[in-house]
View 1 (spheres, rainbow, N blue to C red):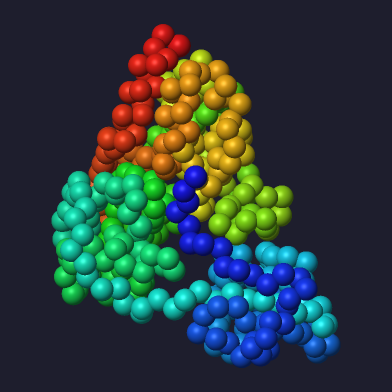
View 2 (view 1 turned 60 degrees about the vertical axis):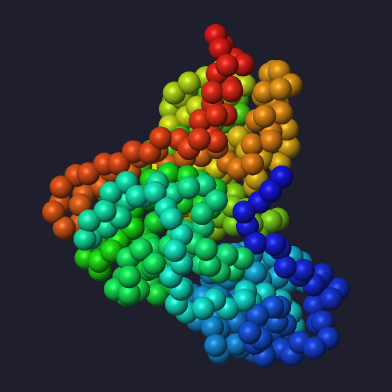
Length: 353
């Protein structure tokens, strides 16, 4: 099943924590580096220890690398920036390849729902990465926006993510808003941080949630067994709440849900639904086996659902106050052709269910 994440780097195993050619506290441009703690370091937070030893990375950057699953000790991944260092412990930190400081314009078409001098609202296609990152250094929405908006756009918000105030996963389609001015960037960033807006997603999931409408609550953090995945965790995660209601059900095999975010965590809808036993159809990260709900449907439909090449998740609508006028505005986008074709196939094979 395809994934939309970068490949997992070949971490050294516990018996290979000092690979030839690596010197402690001597950072490379990218790749794994080996750092060994002395008795003087015992008890320090791991993020502070690494920042002090490396000298070239801030604690916030190291926290991000830890959250991404890029730090490993003798017993496996280190997941908590506050973990205490032990004397004599050796750590492997995998540095991602550097990214160009400024993305370059690329003439990549994207569907625009609305545009004015302050913002662009678009219908992001599935498969389009929002901003450059390791594994997708160009060909992103940011590259397309730079070509569309011109040189003035480069100064809006973050240097590597100009105009980006929120994001959708690569293979999630639907409504996004992008800031074209600093006023819009500041106002929209605050709106997303305060959840002072309305977002609705459409998801086709396996099984039938009970109750048919409700809330899914659970802190989300990095999966300690697989750095590409997020998970509902007992400690160390961030609080997350997803509200859902069932719009259409086909027996107890499939359901079409409307989901609304009370918080905005990485992969939140996908993680919460999977943890609740109703993974999104086609999800390459959170659907790892044939679900039990698939056993109750015909072979042709089952095969079509299991072969769907991406998560069947779509950002259907987005409402917010215009950053300059304060006027409430709202935008909708119909599910894309591939997802609509799948829904039509489900309906034709399970009509009357």
